[in-house]
Image 1 (cartoon, one colour):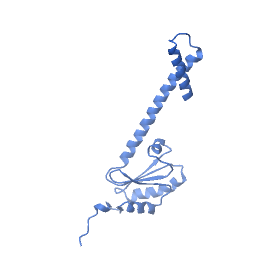
Image 2 (image 1 turned 120 degrees about the horizontal axis):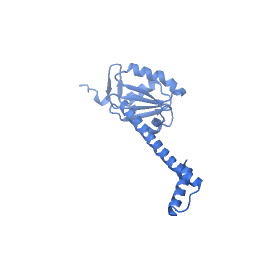
Image 3 (image 1 turned 120 degrees about the vertical axis):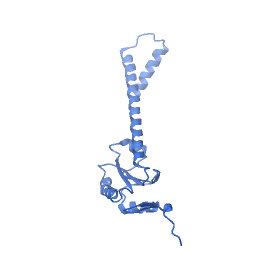
Length: 174
């Protein structure tokens, strides 16, 4: 497509330089029309890709920054390690409902997410603080205990009835 775009543009430029004089051969006219069509298709495709990427960004923003820490797992339904992560994510989602937001996003069904967030391998778990700031990311399988330990290391104490950041915990008086 790119080669056709270049060739058609070259033909059109040379015809215009000649002052539009002389007849264009059948193939030259077809090349110019093909170039115009290719340019339109390219503009539409780029526009759609940008809108998908911005929709993906808006979608992830809605998943994080709502006053609770969030764990977002980017993977795929057909990935072996992702399949092993699924019950762990579901357990965390149920056990810490209202305390920790847990989300799974399929990057095979929405490839814009993978490129938008720099995903190099799946599954990738991204840890967000309550304001939506990324704290940590991990690639590959991550056990439930490893996830809970990482939250603790990041300063969050997850219990089934509350979540506190270490610096917001009340200081004990001596």
